[in-house]
Image (cartoon, rainbow, N blue to C red):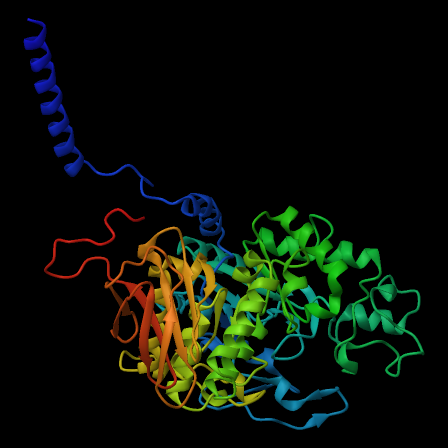
Length: 539
């Protein structure tokens, strides 16, 4: 009886085991079952980045006056009275003459009539580009068209609209899942500011110590780069810092209450590490999760590890420019970018904007010759760690080699489906939205002899992106080690831009990349017509 019972128990166990095995084939694996220890450690870091809107967005920069023609121009004509001039939308800006009586160039007083309402009417277009953040050049009350000479930080320039228009714009953007960043020129004001005029004329003025005034200065006051129209604000005065950001009613917190999400600080370098740190802490207290970004053209590390959330990453853009114009080889570029990443707080790097062109730089179409080289630069702008900063009209191929021609009115007639540059930029923004690693992923430099090679990776093999850039004028044959343990031998990587395919061999790639070309490679997880999946038990 004992042996018979044992046989029954044994048979039941075998049947149960078989049943369990069959169930295991059909039941879904538990989440993260196949994660490695590195995956488990990285997952919360990635989740925090993904929750932070400041990390890795696509930024679209707009000069309000030049973006969209106003429908209320007749009612606004009085705002452009002499010495200002209102130009026709089909005119292009041209350098004018110096008017010593007012201390300005005549082209600084040329206007095209765009405003916040006309910008609001183009939000469908901006959203359709795949934009996450709308960044506006200065909109506060000022004499010039560029408005870096503020008369009043708290008022919107009358040609543009009102604070209510800003709030309406912010609300609409938020409803579309987008954010609004303003340009804050807090280092200096304009000579025509009533505050400054009173301070200059009256030694007893309550604003006297808000500026740096005295006979030791050749202008009678200290000015940014000795430009008479741009008197320095005296940050050494504690009352100035309190006025700008140190209280709930201060200038910047007031704009945050209107729905503004971030502040791009003009000439942030001039403010220095100490005051920037104080300002950033105060603005984070006023609005947690707000962005404080600085116009700093310096090497990034010390600027993004405390003083600021991020900067304009001109170091990265300069490396891109040198490659795109054939003056920097792939391997040397790899050395530079690898060192930049190693030296810099990575979260700060991800929050920094990669700028190829803007209102202070030549437009891309005039800066880098040839569509092939321009696209080479843009792919790197979208794949390196950081946020691509698109200057309005770059998606339409607008030209302009210098100020003021690089600030021309938007050419809406080019915004058609048959514009190849527009299609290309939309493809890049779509890929960036689809490919999580490009927004929040880690950076790893890859071993290559002549290519600029790197990867962006997360905790999942499906999200891996490998970037191979050939900055030369001839095809390059190279052997690249991927440094990625999850990539399966003999499997395929496919370029998301060209469709080119390359087969893996023991974690390495033998590739021939065409001249002035960037490949953006992704794993092919399942080949058509085959049930076999190489990555079925690899996260």
